[in-house]
Amino acid sequence: MSNTRSLPRLLTEIRACRVCAGSLPLGPRPVLQASASARLLIVGQAPGAKVHASGVPWDDASGERLRDWMGIDAQTFYDAERIALVPMGFCYPGRGGGGDNPPRPECAPLWHERLLALMPDVRLTLLVGQYAQRYVLGNRRKASLTETVEAWREYAPACVPLPHPSPRNTPWLQRHPWFTHDVLPALRERVAEALSQTQQTQQKQKAGVHPHKKENPKMTQPAITVQRVYEPLPEDGQACFLVDRLWPRGVRKEKLAHVSWVKDVAPSTELRQWFHKDPAQWDEFERRYIAELDANRAAWEPIAEASKTRPVVLLYSSQETVRNNATVLRDYLMKKRRK
Image (cartoon, rainbow, N blue to C red; front, side, top):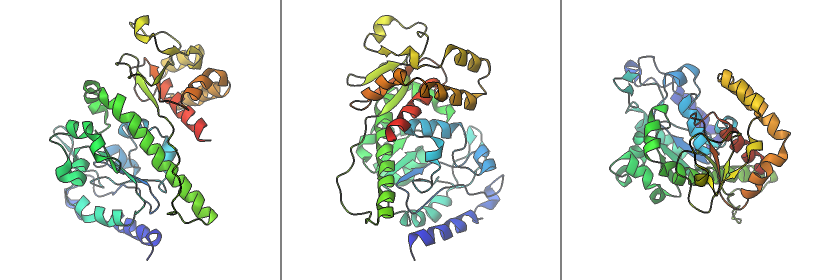
């Protein structure tokens, strides 16, 4: 039986699983996403209460940050033909003293091997959190999550270990700026490459070309990343652009001597002031800002040109690390160059 026929049957079986129902405070509701054609696999921990309620994997603040780390939008993230989302535990495990309980131990041994056997095209696996790293890497993992993530090059090209993107881990990110400077650019490049391979495979299949026929791989484009301007600047070789309309408070001109300030690419003063009055209107802010970018190509074109030849870093001052103008601009530029 082909994978395309047997995987849906396995998913139906998983979603009907009641093995640890008695240990789940909200009852069983397995949440995952998988397809036989997936090239990128994300192994997380377990759904939280919000994901349990919605039934949508990573449908929370952790998911927003993870998508930001990967440099992709929600539409791409939830494309099951390209990305598989397989946590260590498929159901919400309830809460303990310090947060959510660990994933149920019955789940991964029961289902993971069978699932992965039906996803032969996976080329990149993201191991999010210590439970995924312990299960997949085994004795290859380091003594701590920090050491494992810092040694990410040792697990390439098949895997990239990551900390959990929960807002609770923001202090960890602040203590380890190397993650933003070193790991995220490489992560985004590898994600883009894996997804590009998926698109090429689909195009070949439509054209009647065997998907495993060897061809010259497409070169990966340099990464476009974002970071707060108050963090240490990246090393030489990356083009840095300050994308705020106002100069960041407390930052000396000397620190940004080699940074291009492209204030015209920032949201208009009217839009910025409107959003600051009501940050809950994020979706509308994003829509309006994209409309401004569409009407002001000259402002962002220098950044797009620079990104063709070397990595680009968009600097911003906001304390909000996920929902800010720099992340919208980054996603906008990445979509433009994929066309």
